[in-house]
Length: 467
Ligand SMILES: [Zn+2]
Image (cartoon, rainbow, N blue to C red; front, side):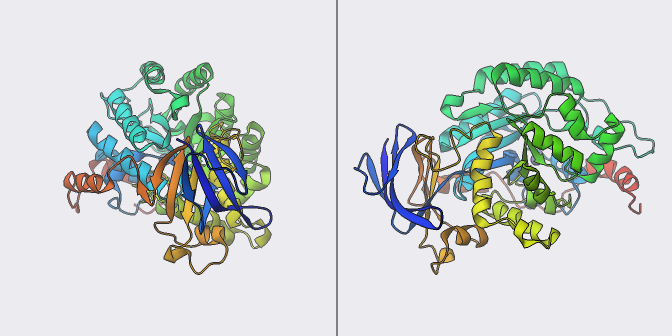
């Protein structure tokens, strides 16, 4: 399908211009005034066209637990999360649909799903998520969340007696699984990519990291992992490696231009220099970092060092939404309190560029996505500037980033296919999805996690909290 978007606002330097945009054969074919009409005409008046954003880190199936986990740091939060992980691929499919739709309706055209696997049904889990993403039509990078160490290994010993439990998985079996996953699901031309995505150094052996690096080189896959999200992880890295986790990642060959690293809260200056030198991308998940008390990532330091930074929602159990515009707003405002020099603060236009081109860069697609450039793939979002939250008229991008826009997405295209039209998701019946999610869940309160109790005493002691 081809489209001609007429008389639409796009950002220009300085300000904005009103222009026509042609979408042809999946790409932006022309941007100029008064273009000849091809395909379907879209009235762009009173609308703003931007490149689609990337929801650069999430875990879709956490949607089943949003709103329920009490205030707790990552190490205790995750123990509860794992206790109640959804056991059914059909649930994974439904939460992939939900994640894709919430991402699209908040300006995202790509989702990076660090996907929790159901033990014994790993392939079925991935198939279910991929089915959801294909149905909605969003571009998806699926990184199966794999680990060959047990959750107890993720806590530092801190000089105390602490013997991690064994893990049922081995690096060898996980690498065989990943080989099969790549063969079955990696389809870059169709907008579905598999990434190698070990959970994080706190739960993975060097052997697993090395095997995944080799696999990524063999198939040109993106690499993704959690990195230094919490203070406990920083302590653990020094216990485990005798150096920082970033130095170890570099040593294992994991860093690079197609590597994106979620969180990056507890890095020091030498670590930041390494990220810049290797052109690795930081995925900033501000809401999750607040929700879990992980800390404030040193985003100004990253930007000043030339490190590419983009935004993620993180899973819906640590956020507890998938509203990408919300993550962009908080992620760009949060740091103002860390630096009196307002010249370092992130402007709304800069935030938009981080969310679009920054996201594309982290996935090795900066030549293909992330800006309104003729020849790039048409992953685009059209915002309705007549919504109440975007009025009265001032600066459209300022309203979008600094405001609290609701129902602002009028249309969205992925690879030139229109997946949102007139504010409605085109390929999936959202009312039906709402009914199904309602029917397959129930109100929950007072649930008790056994794993949290097992962790809490040691966690409090090692972090210097009263026990
Ligand atoms: Zn995460």
